[in-house]
Length: 330
Ligand code: PHB
Ligand code: FE
Image (tube, rainbow, N blue to C red; front, side, top):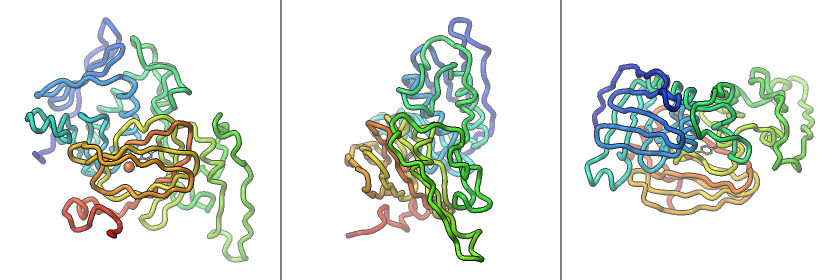
């Protein structure tokens, strides 16, 4: 694969007189939408995607700054993060495309591709559609251009610098944050724990009600970070319906199911070939290996803790084979 970085910014047209949406180009990729679909074109072909799925995936890719490794929007298109640059691909991680020689990818400066994706997301998101919301809690993205929803697409996920409630964390200590308890978490206890540190340890001992915090999350499939200990990050999230992307991680990643149930569809990272279905119930712990992609299905709103290892350069140690793709071999 070419590692030349295309440093050109994107271009966009004026609004289409028929439906009101702009068209976007970056490198040799073109993006356009109509009332129902996004259409992505590159020199080897055209790919058509349901507009709501496309915007939900685009929302995650933008909000997470391309995340770790692969963000597959579906089985054909997506991005790979090289931390500074990023590949945009069509069919590169799909066996049928590769065998036919119709895969295509280009590497971009991350800031340029991010600016392009943000512009698409803003222009193509209509008033009343929130790409972070569960489908039962938002309107539709379909139809001709109808206003926008910048408040939703600019939503910033919450990232603590320290354990929540210790001095120096973010505003997350105000655990209600102005958000109501979600309709499916009305049974979640809202009491905060009492903390009585010994004199001298006041700034080091902390505790908060994580279930209360998650019961008030206004978004789905969007991990926040509630604690960082060296390179270990606890990223809890509230989940409902389908993780829009199919994540191919570049390191192992742990899941702790805190409530209810999620089924994970697990496939080979390079080809997408199915490998397993993992159904996790409250209390279950699993490790997603570094050589797979995974997509979650949560039939009702549930709470999940994603545990990430942020060690810089870890992706190179897995991709070189220095580290095995699983945390333990039996
Ligand atoms: C993941 O890809 O591991 C992931 C992403 C978002 C979530 C949960 C898990 O909300
Ligand atoms: Fe993941």
